[in-house]
Length: 167
Image (cartoon, rainbow, N blue to C red; front, side, top):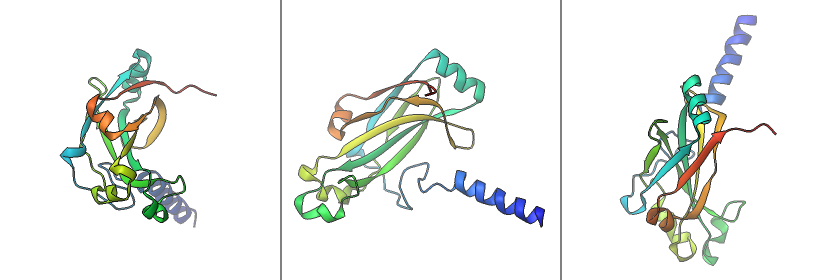
C-alpha cells in the first residue's frame, strides 16, 4: 500500500512540475503558433555577477518568457480575459547565461490581432532561472519589460537580472 501511495504521489508531483500548460517553445494550453518574422524581436539579459555565479553553481539556466496580448476592440470585448485583454499566446526561450541573448520568433496568434484595438499588439517580457529539467526555481529574477511589440522591435529590450531578494 505504501509503495502504491508513494508511486502515485511521485507521479502527481512530476506532473505538477513537468506538465505545465505552457510549452517550452511557446503556446498555451496546447496552442502552438508558427514563427512570424513580422513579429520577431531580440531580447538580452544583463545578469549581475552574483546572479551569474549562483546560476553557474546551481547549474540553472535562464528563460526569457514573452506574453503577447492586446486591448480588445469594442466588437471583441467578449473575447477578453479577466484583465480585459486579448491573449495572443506565449513564447519561452532558454538562453545561455554566458551570452544571455534571445531571438524571439514571434510565435503568436496572428489571427487574434484582428480583435486588438488598432492591431497594436503588446508584449510582456520576463526572465527567470530554471533547473536543469526546466522547472522555474525563482533563484534569479529579472525586471520585466512591457510595451508595444513595435517598440520591442525598434529597440531590443534588456532585462536586468539579479538574485531573488527574500521579503
